[in-house]
Each structure stands twice: as C-alpha cells, then as structure tokens.
Image (tube, rainbow, N blue to C red):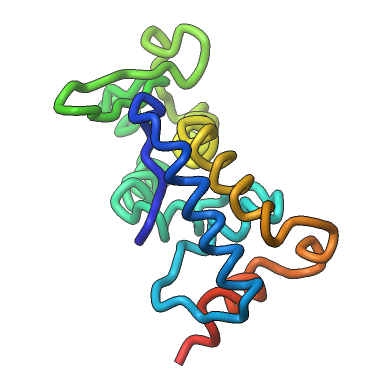
Length: 166
C-alpha cells in the first residue's frame, strides 16, 4: 500500500502535492482509480486521529509488535530493553529520533508502554510525515477543497476515488 516516506530529507513534497492533485482531479472528473490508498489517508484528510487499526493497515509488523508489547507481562516489557526512541533507515544510514524529551534515557516499562505506543504512532503516522502529508493535502484541496468535502466520511471519500469494493 502507498504510504509516505518518514524522511523529509528526500525533498519530495512537490511529488506528494502532485499525487494529491491527481486524487482531487479523479474525484472532480468522476474517474475511478485502479489502486487503493490506506484508509488512514482519508481519515487524516478528514482531520481524524490515527488509531491502532490504521497502524495495522499501514505497517502490520509494527502493529503486531505493539500488540505483543501490550500483552506482555511487566517483567517481559522490561526485558525488551526499549526506550522512548524510534529508528528509521535513510539511504542506508540509521537515524534515531526521541519520542519524548530524553527518550534515549527513558525506558519503556509495564506502566508506560501505552504512552510509548501512542508516542510512536504519533511520530510514525503524523509528525515524521508532516511535510509530505501537508503537500499531499494541499494538492488535493486545490481541486476538491472546501466545506463540501467535510460532509463525507473517510469511507465515502475512498469510494469517490476507488469505487465500491467488489
């Protein structure tokens, strides 16, 4: 499934804006596209917050790991050795981001694991892709912006783009 690059170093905002414009153009002209975006894109366009269900669609491996983290005993959570950081690979180089102030020195425990998951999801699904998503949404809004779009639910917006699932 299409998802945004977590690296703003790539400078692809113009390309993301173009994809948003193509999506808006498809709706404007009543053309059904042959591919599906994750529902999270439509939910974000409607101003809704990402959920674990959205994470599962975008990155099922991370979602499965978080489910295991939530089900683990507090002793097992401590044994994982997690801290409030996230890593991503950019051009073969691993970059680490603090998910909270002093994240590298803040261990994930049984009592704060939900806070860690929420912080990771906020980073992965929102802040790490902010510039790309803003460009995408600006492109879409050029052709289909306005108060009428706010009347749709994310599922209805997807149907305008992709048609009804068969």
